[in-house]
Length: 185
Image 1 (cartoon, rainbow, N blue to C red):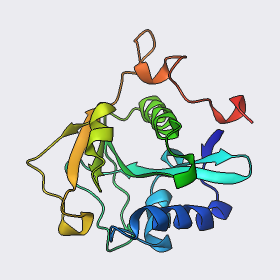
Image 2 (image 1 turned 45 degrees about the vertical axis):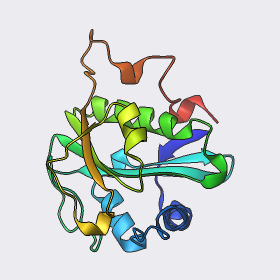
Image 3 (image 1 turned 90 degrees about the vertical axis):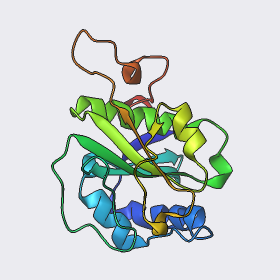
């Protein structure tokens, strides 16, 4: 497995994974919206490769806390925010159950810490709020996501672990962090 930044030739695989994960729930956005979200912050968007295959992806972009992308449109602004909104994390169905979502999430969290972000937000959809809670995210029931995210959507957030020198950062712990691109092959 290898985690790396999204390249132009990854989009067919990313769009196919997104459609497989979200179409039945009425949440699929399409290529233009996905690419616009990655274009807003290429350094915080990743794919997970298994050999020559894309096993998963993660899209995140700076967004003000308690705000979120509109699923019905592409991004036309890039926000300068200390909050990073994790918009999508998808693992291909045949690779689920192997801990890969956690691996990709730890890599992303370490990246957010290294770039100085203070918080990560997301909207849990399709009943995924238990997964996010198990990974340190707290529900904000006072924030109501739009109906386009589904009836069970939950806005959640967590603080980014401290990455300053001399501080303990769980996202960088050797036994828990994802391998960096040059460490795996």
